[in-house]
Amino acid sequence: MVFKMEIEYPEIKEGAEVTVEEGYLQDGLVVYYTIVPAVAMSANFTRQEALTVRDGTVKEVKRDDSGAFYVTVGFDEQ
Image 1: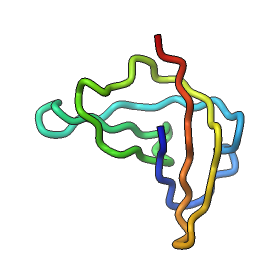
Image 2 (image 1 turned 180 degrees about the vertical axis):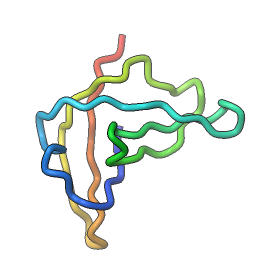
Image 3 (image 1 turned 90 degrees about the vertical axis):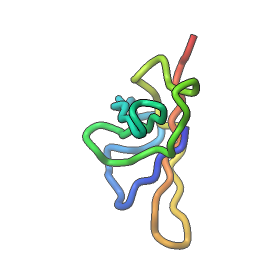
Image 4 (image 1 turned 30 degrees about the vertical axis):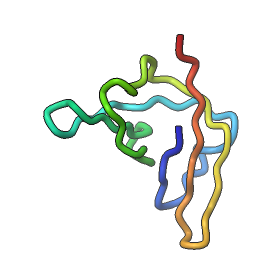
């Protein structure tokens, strides 16, 4: 899953373990995730696409031309 991060946080690097918090939109039909403590946010997903786990590992951190960072996190889901 990819998260957008506006500023660089030194603790968010490849191999780091992170926890995400689930948020809801449209009365719970849409979910999104935030890396705790609110350092990066995911795109929106349907309820059927929701994660079953909340802990993951940072696989990659990239910076784009606009200066935003994109954090790829892997989750071990059953």
